[in-house]
Amino acid sequence: MVLETLLGVVIVTSFALLGYRFKAFDLKGIIAGLILVYFVLFSTGLRWVLIVLAFVIVGSLFTKFGKNKKRLAIKDSVYFTRSWRNVLGNGMVPAIFSGLEMVSSIYKVDGSLFVIAFGSSLATACADTLATEIGLLSKEKPRYVLNPKKYAIPGSSGGITGLGTLASLLGSSIIALVFIFVRIMDSSLAIFLALLFSGFLGSLVDSILGQTLQFKGLCSICNEEIENKIHHKNKAKRIKGIEVIDNNVVNLLAGFFGAIFGIVIYLLLR
Ligand SMILES: [Zn+2]
Image (tube, rainbow, N blue to C red):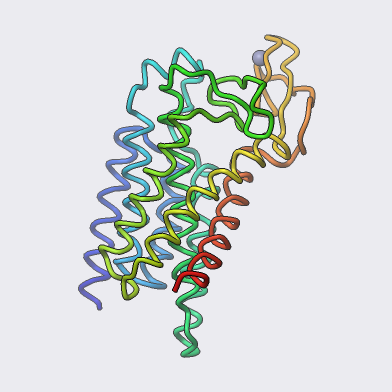
């Protein structure tokens, strides 16, 4: 156990240095990530961390993949580097369920639903990340998930493409496979399917919330529709959505939905 934790510290710290070196994260992003991943390591152990790392590695690689082509579509150089808000948006929910599993094992209660919720929220994060990052490379114009006749700006929340939708299944299947592979629970088809579909559905909820609740503003200087409150050092005028709900808050909410989907699907199938 001590050896496993030590090995975990070495692995996590090495990946953090790599992530910073290759600008996958900025400094605050790395610190936020380290806090969350160490929390998972000390509450539930190395095998849980390996699932988180699978998401971080796959997500970072696909974010860098086709960077030049994506640059033309989004024109935002910091897009490719994750901030602490991005990290918390994707990592808070899995960390909470990891903590809940630790608490349930202290009180000797069955925590298997927390384990499923942990995997499902990560499956959602991975599905959503790949849907965005691979979807951006699609030749097809994104359409709004709740209004498919209307085209969305590439990379903006709420827009989906066929390629991105397939990619979200790829993202959740990667997490489902790693989850089965590290055996933090007795593996079964029910667990695999719960993670696969919860990730897919969670990422769909992400798009729906992105289209409905998420803040969208208009920059008075460049006249572009934007998702950040500040553009060109100027406060954007709200077009729609709720001021405090940005993409990271949407990711956080989608992670919770993904966790609930995972629990429900698991209970139905097991
Ligand atoms: Zn602007």
